[in-house]
Image 1 (cartoon, rainbow, N blue to C red):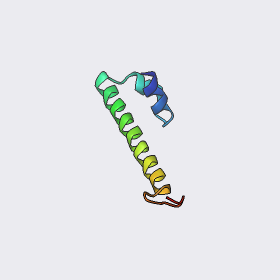
Image 2 (cartoon, one colour):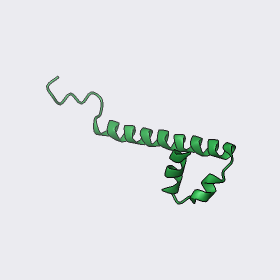
Image 3 (spheres, rainbow, N blue to C red):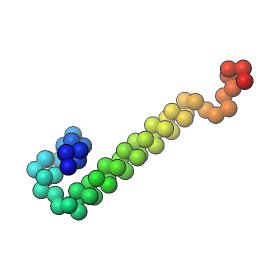
Image 4 (cartoon, helix red, strand yellow):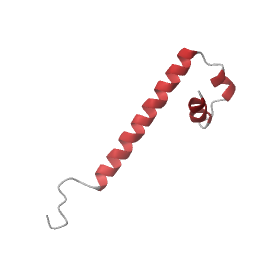
Length: 61
């Protein structure tokens, strides 16, 4: 619960609303947070892959 509060409070969700959430709502919020993190990882991986194209071979290979 503390992790959900930290994540959503930083995004402007009042803590009392999070504390009053049902277990089903908390599960939904946890799933949405997991999707957010998965998407952030994909964005960062794509950005890094763009910096290092495959087959560059600029080191005399």
